Length: 526
Figure 1 (cartoon, helix red, strand yellow):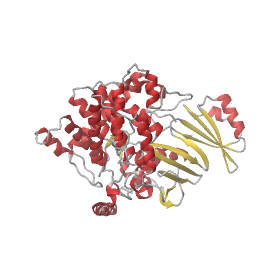
Figure 2: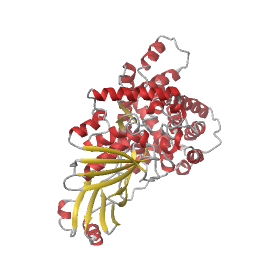
Figure 3: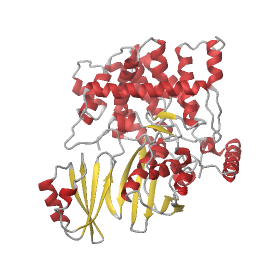
């Protein structure tokens, strides 16, 4: 699937500490719910012993997201923290087990769902930033991203005939025949579901399921994008010096079949959501199950009183970044940009700097679009998942993207925006992911601030025409190679780094005791 700025990079709009855990799991749950026609009595969830999820699924939001998806809820639904109990209250029995599955991807979900009528299995992976892929359905090897309407037909030995009939009578993006253990599954990907009228003409169809899309930008047949890497973008520009944000608009228009007005309007909507979240964070947030309480309000008071060291616009950036992190940790609404764990660096830096410069929301949107295109190059070549690449994949990507956005706010050139991105990413290579007490707060708060500060420094260096030396594509490829040499213990597993310090261990035990006590009094944490 081709990367989309709004699918893969700037978004989703969500609640929860981690997009890899919460938003991706919710989308997996939504597809699983459709697979069962929203009718199931038992859910078995299995995690591979050597993956990231056995130690993180309960505290980083996988359970919350997955069960919210099985309830049919949206990623920004205020009820999400209570989804495990809500699912149980609906009569569904939930089992979570750790198994020796040998799954190659650290974020693999194995689901078995049962009702009085049927049983289905679904295996899916969370690929970073809220994106996911279903890789196995009832033993059939598939590749489903939730980016279209999918009609699934279980057929009795007449798969080829069903495919031929559909090709003759239905306009689809793809019609695939899967075979496993003597069974056949026809998968139809299209802008709409196969109609009942068409289905009534098919022979040998034993069962029909309709899986709705879970992504905001849908895929279309024969979609082509103008470029997929920074080098290709520069070749496409051919020295014209087109602003990076305009190239981003061109890309997303081609990817999503949208107009320029629609692309900009979508990003303005995101800007407004983030600004509301910033205000909420500064005003004060409350949530029991977290390490850090409300701190940004005090920073705001001292900033207004002139009692902080003079950091210029950087102080406003720090305020906005920390407020967004507090909203995230209190289960408020945030935008994963590019992930929930790194949700604050990019939008905090952009909105704070734009306000300091007296710029409007459309200028903020243009800057975020520019950053989104840089993110496309990262997502196309690599990942935003800390479980795969460490925090260099999250905080490093956020700094890389934010640097280009800040250059865009300053009306810098395309070359300067790309240079800023390269320099910012270079200085974040090798960054580990080691959340204390399994909450995405410490050292994540500081890393978001560091990413934003780094972006500001590199933006100014690029505006002064500092030489990045290494092209952006090569930096991204290097980050990918570095990730392969990082031990899994320091890739968001709660098995290394600061998460193993005595203080972190004590905090984790204390939070676990508090959760247990709260559950004993009827909480809905599951």
